[in-house]
Length: 193
Image (tube, rainbow, N blue to C red; front, side, top):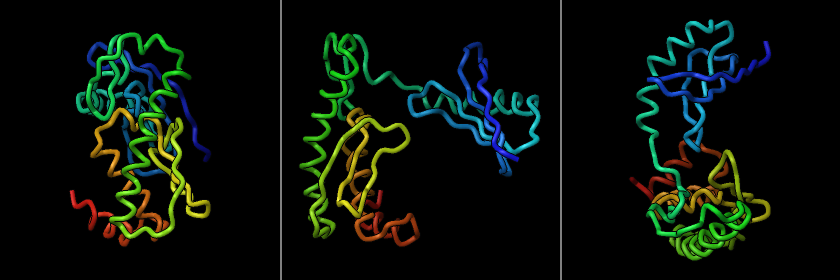
């Protein structure tokens, strides 16, 4: 049976949320929140009834939503840069293209400097080219063949410690391409926390 997807509107504790429900070949229900915190993603085994899904929503989603409550990264007079709320009146009025350019430039400067330090610490010999662009489903991608690592612009809103963890992750792929036990063993040797 092929995956079936439906868009729902679910009400949890009196508030309405868009949801995407996907029936697929799997064993259990899975609830998650999209990265922007606005959509509930629900993945369920084939033949799961809608009534059972609705019961699961009321049971599991309230706790999940509480863990994912956060302030928007861009507001009327602020923007989060490296995990800190910076005063930036009118940033929200700029065209998205202009916003992305500003954020990309800030992140790119940090990535280039920090990646060089981390690569040296990790013993990465061949230099990489670094890029920053808008990505929906990933924080970073290491193209080992081209020696290029691309980072998601959204990282600019996170703390430097989080960004560093993504840099370490992508540079670990220099020697270990998959996410095997050896990959995490090496990554944890540089970032035990």
